[in-house]
Image 1 (spheres, protein in one colour):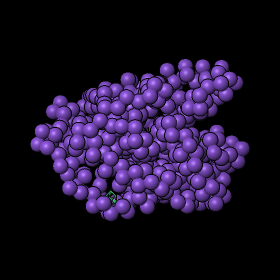
Image 2: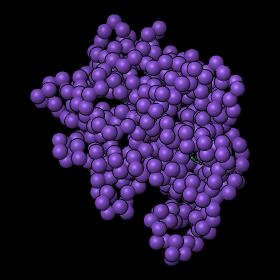
Image 3: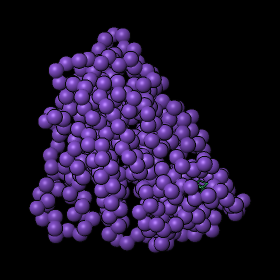
Image 4: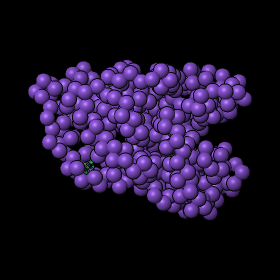
Length: 435
Ligand code: SF4
Ligand code: SF4
């Protein structure tokens, strides 16, 4: 694709990177074939190629975003299915991030939208704020029909109760053999996940400790920053990124870290991108690159480093049929698909890919709250494809997908790490108690 950035524009680091990406695009449109929004809406501007043109036009012409551009960019799920399909290696992720940040700087959204986006940006990344909102939501739930549609849907998404925690909050979870751990890793416990599904972090910690790995949860790290990053709120995301990089890097220098573990593929994707985000920052680029290099999805880490010790007991029979939902951030962004499935297969159960598994379930961070009509349609399609397998339960590696899919089916859904923990001596996951 020809580009027309001026010399002045090419002094900006983001323009430099985006220009290189635009030049790789050959307009072939293959990406449209696997784009969920293009498939649903059939509009060129709701596909990757159309969005690339919209972003290019804004950036090259120093054009402020307008209602039409915002509509089509907002409808993008950031699922990166287009990146898996693209034969030219176009990094659409970096383009859409740049586009969103430009929109946030140049476009004033209507009051309601601004209010909801600011609300999400302030509440979700902070576990204490989020807990308060969950409690308040219980009081207003009976009156939700009086609220505007978007608020009503947010209230519907709030969990009815806080799941019980079974592990104490500690900064260091010692390995089984405290004196001789085989490795030391940091765990990103996250923001939303640790409030609504603490069992995922607990299974991760138990499993690693049991395999003689020390797990550190450094104080001060909650959100990875991706929530604000994807809302285009670059300044807020930047603050979180900087804080996280400095805390993890200090821990790495002072006490040593073999890896930084993410058990939410959306967050893992952003952590692996810290190096790119700070590529031009003289103070942080080396540290950010190191953090990205250290980051592993929990399944990746287990596969590369741990000889899993599977244990037989009365509760973990091997006759389950499991549907594996490959989260977009896992399969398209991090290119991890077979590894989690193969780990689950080691438990002796049967694991199946979901038909049309490359398509998003509609979760996509805050997408199911901000673009609920499209998200609902994608969820319906996902559930119908899952039902074709007739599984006893569903496994996946991303809390957003777990929440979204659980809203559309009674088939239990859980995190891959909960299954591995269960089959290596951990408790049977709560969600499967009735199986
Ligand atoms: S990220 Fe997903 S929704 Fe967005 S353009 Fe690519 S395939 Fe389509
Ligand atoms: S598939 Fe790749 S090269 Fe072809 S239009 Fe899409 S982004 Fe451009």
